[in-house]
Image (cartoon, rainbow, N blue to C red; front, side):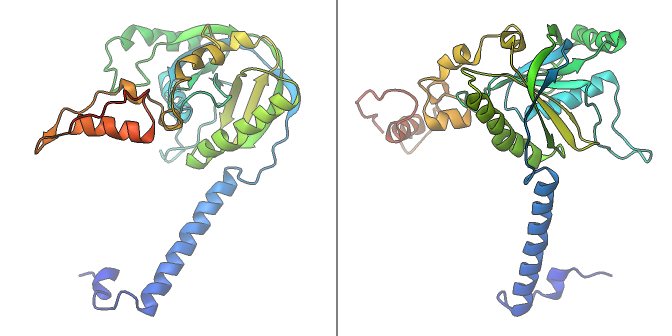
Length: 297
């Protein structure tokens, strides 16, 4: 026989001193844990950017258009294709340790591209021909995969040679979790952008990173020459961003255009929700120019 806390206190008033104290203790513990996670991920880490060198090499990769946070899951999918098992001696999941093997190239970093529409590539840089062969062999079965269920595993591998170039180099802690994704987006990349602008850089720039969750550290490279090669055969951020120039702030934030959405055709009591949605778009000033003619509800 067992009783839980709620059963034991079901007759207590909701605003009793005991309940308030319990609530305060729980919030304090959760807040401390949340702050500890942030500190472990480098919340107060002072970034130092130095002149260094990107090693270059043959980059076997998957290219995606998604939020940058998806790069972590893509890297793990590639590790799975390589047969890398991140488990400890007891069979529990262990932190990844693929620094200097697994790299991600982030193409759009000037803030002009909507969330969810940024481009990146994740893959390996290695001279090990067996590892490259393993990944490229996966292309033969990718066409049989479900585009929705198996994403990003259903994205084919490609190969490009990245040059050895001078680069701005920085290090930052990582835990591989939500805090790390947030700090990368709102601390690390803006710091590198400021460095780029302060040192006379103009236009878009590319950031390459390699991380080790086991060591708790990421290395960031910002190539200072031959930047066009790091776009992996794709258009620059300036060219790519032209399609989003007429997007509103909320559309850029959400990562899609309201004009391209399929409006619902449902109606209740004569009210058409497609027309209601159009009216809301006009009211908020999003999704293109208003026609000036009110929609009949």
